[in-house]
Image 1: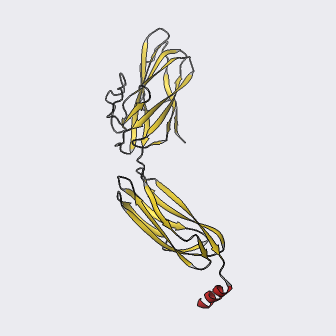
Image 2: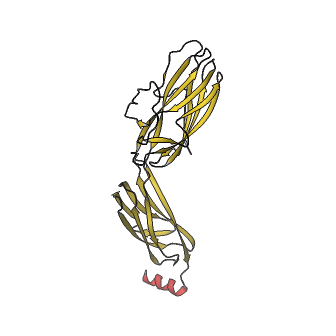
Image 3: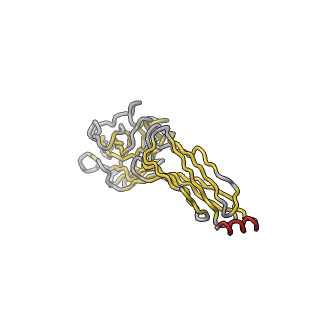
Length: 276
């Protein structure tokens, strides 16, 4: 699901003064897929351009500028030509140039266009600004422009993996068995708020929770839990691996554990009753 933004006004909009015959072009909506951009990976930008005036605009050029951190001001201050992308930018256009052409928009009309981009692999998580310049010609043949800014969300994607998970596929009701889960941080950066938990309503679980906190790059840990099935049949438990992303939002990785629980024999049941 992409991140859809809408509204007639966009943060950082700068336009020429309103005069007769001057069309007013705006980025009415935009969608980014995926919604959170992963450093080093491709993403798609889909724009909806609207003419919110009573005058036609023609020969429209839509140009993407240089992506900068939201805490930085664009080098051109939102004015003048958009700076073409370069290999050192936070993100660059791939497959086409950074400018696309629309022949015209009638009053109240709209059009859609898309760009494919790739983000820099070294990009830090955060909110980034992408300036967009709209050049067009009014009904009197005058060249005009409008500069707008849209926001992009970048988030590193941790590679937190369950490297092994050992447990019996078949047990006897009432018998204690072990569940051992090994997990590791395969990212090149530390992951915060790491915790693991084994849950299952049909089992009595011991030592089923482990909080690690910060798990350094290429480091790992082990959960060693034990459980006892409370009823017979096909049962299921869940191993939940939690962490917090760079925006401090909790993320989860889940692995299902399916176990067949058999009834104890009459002799075993009697021995257990005597033991209790």
